[in-house]
Image (tube, rainbow, N blue to C red; front, side, top):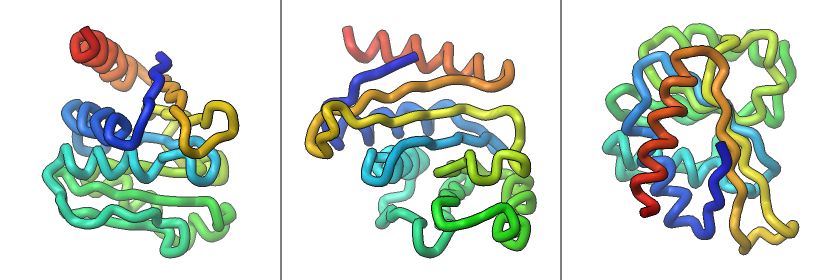
Length: 159
């Protein structure tokens, strides 16, 4: 599934929609270059889960935890290698009943669950002020069902 997002407000709206269908222990993998809008999407998810405080990129502190229901864990593996991930105790967080958003999942692919929702955000025309192309894919039946629900919601909301 691909969606064109034309501004930050609509990226936040997409995040809110995602929040409405996420459950405890769900994992969302985020791909996209620096500045593509991954953290903006997570901000929308946090808003959808009831958190109104600041939502920032965890690039330098590796993980941000937001006190939502369920808790929102936002990881950024950009500056890590596999050894660092083992030390981080990632598996403990993935089993705590929260929702995990993981940026740069390719770095720790072997340590991550095989199932999840994968979101890829791409710039159009190499311009940070332009629209984004958001691709959504599912790994596993649970996430395929969520993706089908999202397709229905997105179709309804754009009529």
